[in-house]
Structures are given as structure tokens and as C-alpha cells.
Amino acid sequence: MAPLLSPPALGLGTWKSSPGEVGEAVRAALELGYRHIDCASIYGNETEIGQALAGAFRDGVVQRDQLWITSKLWNDCHAPEDVRPALLRSLNALQLEQLDLYLIHWPVVHRHGVLMPEQAGDQIPLEQLPLSQTWSAMEALVEEGLVRQIGVSNCSATKLKGLLPSSRVRPAMNQVERHPWLQQNALLQFCRHEGIGVTAYSPLGSPSGPDQAPLLADPTITAIATTHGATPAQVLLAWGIATGTAVIPKSVRRDRLASNLAASQLQLSPEDLQQIAHLERGHRFVDGSFWELPGGPYNRTALWDEPA
Image (cartoon, rainbow, N blue to C red; front, side, top):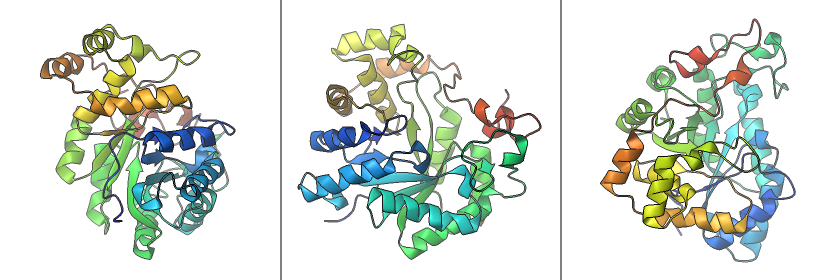
């Protein structure tokens, strides 16, 4: 069976899925028909995901070639000599010989061994360790056959423009926050022009309270959902797919996993899409403010390359 050429449009996100529940969620997702699993070393749950994948392969639920597995390089491993060891740790945890996609998680660099910086000295400016150096080491992973494709996450068009001229292997994907309140149309257009795919994380917004996200209560979204006999989450996911991105909602509940997967069958009308287009408000749930430290090299204006 030939491997998938690109990620299925609807996948399972595993950010904030806690150890002890993420394995069951991945197994349930695979049984329901999910074929795209999005992981990252910093999520701290790849070992449990690997156990779930191995069990699913062993039990005949799915074959490896039927899956698209993504993981991400964390900020403290951007130095070229740290890239391959970081990947091997993820492969070992996931019990895989190869990833379908490996992403640079953030255009932010930490000192090696510092997972979350607490002071400016924990951070390294991009001018000192540019993405191009990290990217060269990522390219070597493709050439070695350890990953099929490589890409970036949380990258602006400006940062991609800086990376592309020196790239031997072009980025296959840019994973960014995207939903109707943050439509990122200019970035989406740039990526399409350059042949770079886009995956939307936080496609349902981000919870502001126990298991509830304000975007799910947006009156336009709820009205469209009522018209289609669908849930607001299904409308949001169907919008992401209809506008040309992959979406990776997170859930650990089997009923919501099934409901989210059904969104791939929901067809929104041109009128629906036009209404949703007017919801843009430039609102980031994940605004990058956690990288801003007194005297540090990172701030939100430079991170996103847009006015604060």
C-alpha cells in the first residue's frame, strides 16, 4: 500500500491531552476512522501515543501506511547537532521508524535543555541561531529517510520568505492557529502560491472555561449549525476544510471524536462561507505572549511580523 501523499483534511490533535487519557483517545480515533494524528515532543504524551499506535497495528485496526503522523521539534533543539537526536527521541516514543511530517514547532529558540524559559538568558535570538541553520538539519532527516516531509509551525509569511531561498527541501506545511476569528487570509494565500500546505490548530478556538470555547457560541456559527442540523464544532471544522486547510481538533471523548470526524461530510453553502468571512477579528487565543520575557529577544510584534 502506498503511503499517504498529504495529511487527511481532518486529524486528531493531541495538545493538552493528558497522559492516562491520550492513548485511549488515539485508539478510539483510529477505530472511528481517523488517519491523521498530530503530535509534538513538548506535549509530553508521545510515549502513550506510541503504545496506542503499536496496539492498533498489532490488533489490525489500521496499518502504518494508512496513517499520517506528524511531530514537532521543540525550541531547545534548534542547534543543528540537536535536531536528529530530538527526532530519534520522538520516533522511539512513538514506536515508529519514520514520520510523515516533522515541523519546527516555533520560530523561537531556547538554550538546550530549557523547555520553558524563565529569564531572558534562557532564550537565543534568531539572529544568533537562524531558522535556516535548523532547516538545513531538518533537510538531512528527509535525505536520510527518517521523515518524509518537513515543515514549520507558527511561521509568518515574512519568516517563510526568509527561509525559502536557501532551502534544498521546501517546507511542505505551515501549522498555524486558524479559525473564523483569525482567518489568516494573507498567509494562506502566500502559502498556496508557494505550494505550502496549511494545517489549522485550535480550529474550535481555545477553552476559556471547563471544556468550553467562546467561538463555539458565536451567533453566526450557531445559526449556521442550526440550519444544517449540525453542531457549532462541525461548522467550524467544515469551514476550515472548505477553505483549503487541514484541521486538527483535540478531544479525548469518543462521542466528540465521532462528531468531529463527521464534520468532513458537512457541506457549507456559499452563503454560509460569506457570513463566516465577516467574523474575522484578528483574535489569537495562542498569542505568543508566553515568549515575552523582560530583556528577552522575543515579542509578539516580531513573532508574528504584524502590528501589535
